[in-house]
Image (cartoon, rainbow, N blue to C red; front, top):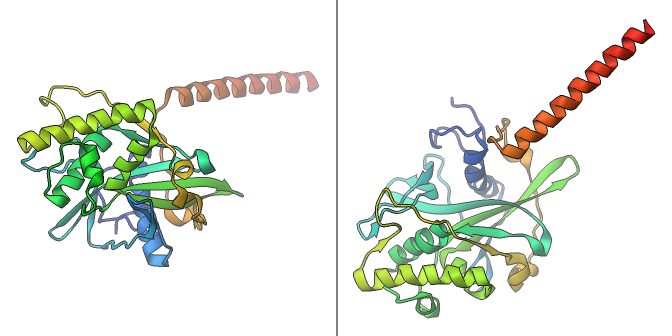
Length: 285
């Protein structure tokens, strides 16, 4: 039997190292979803109308979760990878995953260009089989079908353990949040969305980049859903799931410059204290 790193994710998971911080960050919201389903903890689904519904999750133990996998389709050229690809039988679903610290109204959701200006759009367009000239037309379509796409797992300290809660946003809700943010960055993000939608509207295809060798600037947009969405302000998030409910083995922090600098500083402090201790012992003797 495979070792259990995260709740619900063993042989049904990707072959990547679940103890890596980067991989664990992506899989943790999925683990939360499986735990919430098993223990009947409701998850809030935020729709494009900014309604807080209850998400109906259906995770299959025999399904498979893979990270960093693109949705391949002839109408979408050189797509970037999605955070999660969940496969069960003939059904494949893609998700974006975020793990953020809960700061009440200041809770921040940061989205990259590959998410909002391609993967999220691809998610919407494949579900609706409709062409839209721009984001305004898409958001004005009252008959549009929206589906859960972005899992936002929020955490905060509580006594000696971290506690989690979760909210899921539909694909259309993501675009509406960007538009309604009305900041300089969100307006620039909308330009990228409009450019992608215009290409799909006129050519029937959408390209993330010109060639495999080409690079794309990952322009980011910052959103504050708890501050800006009234239904979230009035929703009670209970943080009932403890980190120990989900994480069974230690997660290895990915290398970070400032972590390494701090380790070096602490090692130097320990070395100095040991030297001082040895000198004091020598004087006492």
